[in-house]
Image (tube, rainbow, N blue to C red; front, top):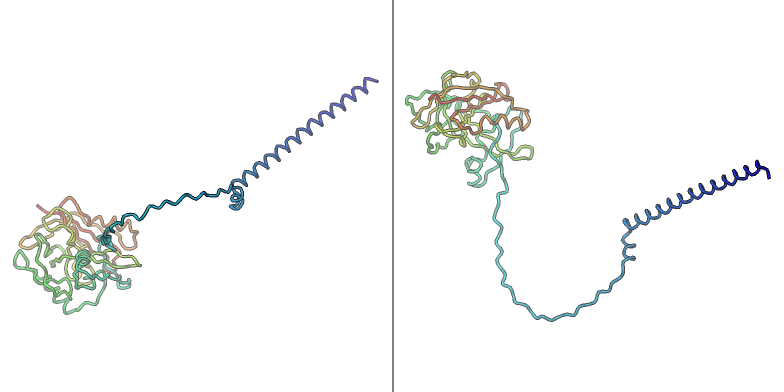
Length: 332
């Protein structure tokens, strides 16, 4: 046989062996792949087997009944009385955390929450017989005759240094006598530079409902300056807050915006007169501001570590979008 034929035969044999080897490799790969798929499918079936398949696979165990032992009747327990649960308040409305406000005529009137019990009256700072707040920004039509007479009485200078407070021009409808005064409770405010000489009465807050939510709002006195009765009395350390209307119901604080730093303020309590001096005046935007801004504005009427008077009213005269804040400190 020629060497050429032998070489050809060797090449064909090598090609055949190589084909066999590659075929074996490919078939082995397919076999491993099929085995992997089968194992994966079985494992998925085990993990996600339907309940009926698991029930069939589980061995059935017949429970062996245990013998019943007769123990006889046990002792009769004496029942203990069940105490009724302690009543808890169903309405928790915090104190006002915003500045006093006066509504414009075109704004909806908030609905006052009716006070039913004496405890609620004490909690919400109103009289029990009052079914509506002294004023919460509602703009009623004032009685011109009553307003004129009351305004004259509030602005008439008093001869004594300790003014009488038997007549309180808080509202045209307020006929009840003022209760006994606490020590240092303000009764009169005089600011000569802007012509203010008005009676001061204590005011609290009312719980009102607006947009389905209840919250507290400070009362604003009519035809008088309202002293927030939760703030300190005159001569005590802390922030004594007074508020008043500027464009309705007496307009006692109409000219508060015209105060200047250094102006004198005279506040009276029963049998005592105290002098203050304006230290700061600012105007802040209130209407339309987000709650966090309005709460930050209310920092002006928050408690302080020093003795001061803080006056609050709305501004400008044709609207109530801003608040005028005036801070006065004792001169001595």
